[in-house]
Image 1 (cartoon, rainbow, N blue to C red):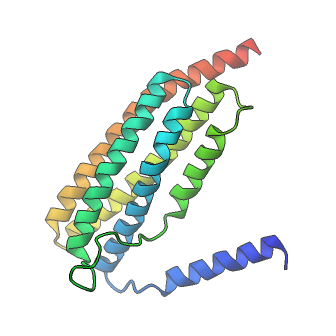
Image 2: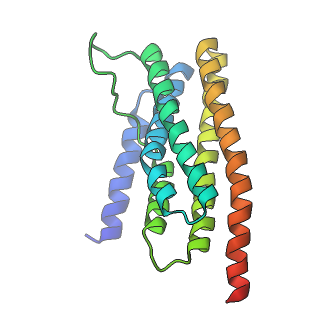
Length: 196
């Protein structure tokens, strides 16, 4: 069996597993979305510090480190919300839940890690690419938080909606800050291009 066929078969199995998940109500969909956001925030929490170390521009490094700190706060918030919405089946079970995989954020952050570890890429160009990929991750999370907040309101869970609104505000602020930093690192990458 070819590697490509094996990968496709593996991906199809994952899709079937996801499709087999019980999503009969909007509340169940909300919990699934929150678990996906939790996985994404965990990936960001673990990856952004590495990216900050790889960044050549101090402003980008600081911005990425801030995003890691924010992701840690979001993990705590999402754990708290999920504990309330979908408590463990057994009382006293560990709070750490196996989160639904977030393949989009995982793939984006893997690209960031690969890029950060590539010594052949010009540092300014690497910074521009890292900023762009980090922006992708933020906007992926913004879309997830926007949907989850709306669904929380629709199912009458105003407390969750308020918690998610705080995270959404954090994500928007981080995207604005990253946009400002990205403009500068992009300019430096373009200067390198002109010199070449």
